[in-house]
Image (cartoon, rainbow, N blue to C red; front, side, top):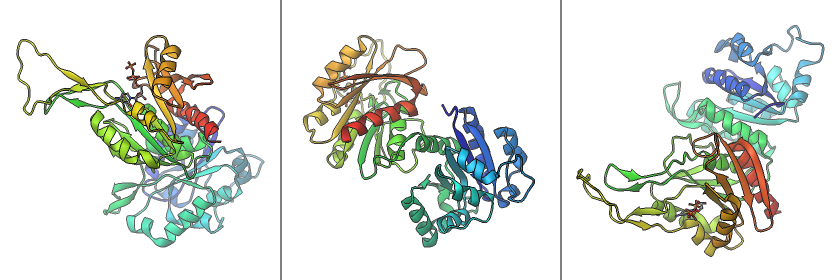
Length: 395
Ligand code: CTP
């Protein structure tokens, strides 16, 4: 996925530096060429040797140390990089970059790069909320620097609050979405649904489906990476909350319907990636159903959210999904018309190693005018391709 991409991981001196070990390992596994620059303080938490072993490249710490090659190191890395990811980013480093201070290898190289720079801050909650730190973050955002929002939770300093470095997997996925995507949805509101709804039979059982929510979450990450204000209405999944996205959790098709229509009006783009149940039990038993020799369930239709959105569609861009096992394009074209949407993203659920629960997908994006085949790629890449088509209509 990241073949031919050079990523410079900057590591500053915070306890969360131990999580950067897994970040570097994951980036390397995705195929990136990874270089690590550490601040002096970072080396107090983790040995450079750890990062050298994982990145397969020399780790740079000292500005005045013996160079590894003839070229000026901070300039050569600054030029080579497709992205800088600073993880963890301390208040000190953020403050330095925001104020044009370049006094060590990391701050100097960041100053000299034209690549995308992503900061993943981690610090004490009061420090994070300090107005000076917030001012620095805001001014860097205005200059085009990107941030991965810290999580709320238990902090190493013994307090609770916002300031935790998100899980390494989350840091990697969010930064890869930043790397892939241009910043072309600034000022746009995007609503995405994801996951498979659960329709209750009784207090312990439900009717569900095999959707993992991965495609919808990838869409939310990409929309956020492109600069949109993103609301994600999610049926139950096992996935991490995408950084900087407003997540509303629902269980049933009826709850999803209610939440979609609560937010629908203000949106510029709505993507229905959720696997919404087409049927729900006519009655939900109040008590647990006892076994007998046979059980017959009476089901009734749920409201088709997408079709109703299509009926109320103004200037909004509306995208639906179609999971098909045969006649993919013909069936998807029918849905395109019936539900009055701009695109149907159709995927063949019988294909091997794509679709449900997989990290990969292979789809056809069908509009009135066109159908575009997207070859097998990661769900993040497919999501990025879908938004490229959406942006074309916006333009
Ligand atoms: N969808 C919806 N509300 C429902 C059911 C589906 O909004 N109650 C949306 C899904 O989110 C998806 C699209 O409709 O974007 C297509 O769903 P799918 O189940 O594939 O198609 P159906 O129209 O239900 O047709 P069929 O099941 O007969 O293939």
